[in-house]
Image (cartoon, rainbow, N blue to C red; front, side):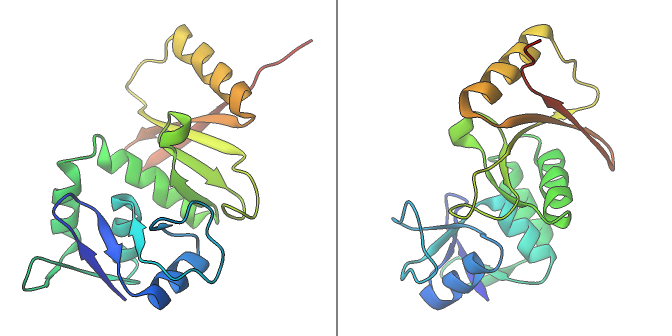
Length: 179
């Protein structure tokens, strides 16, 4: 399946049937101009760079760029993505960990975090988790814990902080408790 890398680090699947197949087999990407997609959409698909890295690593897609449609390697895509995404290696490790556990992982920007995590997929269920990625060496302050609890309560989700230490990833969850 061919994906085109645009100058602004966007990844596009132009062919609607390939876009549908990718979306319907794992909820990858977001159909262009369709806020709540169904199985039968007819639109290109925009992939998040982290999704692109994962799918390229798994051999599901090939990425081409430029007017000559040169094929990009995993390292080239990683370098391009590093320029626009902080802590890429940690975020990618968490994304891959969650995907390989069977979760559907989408960008969490609308929740003010790194990822929204679904058990089945957007439009099928609500995301029970939102995830913020941190290095295990980063401190965790009391205001951050309160913010996590408030955000989780406001959006009715469990807030997870993914602590990354090399290959080791630990998840901390925050919920409000009322005695």
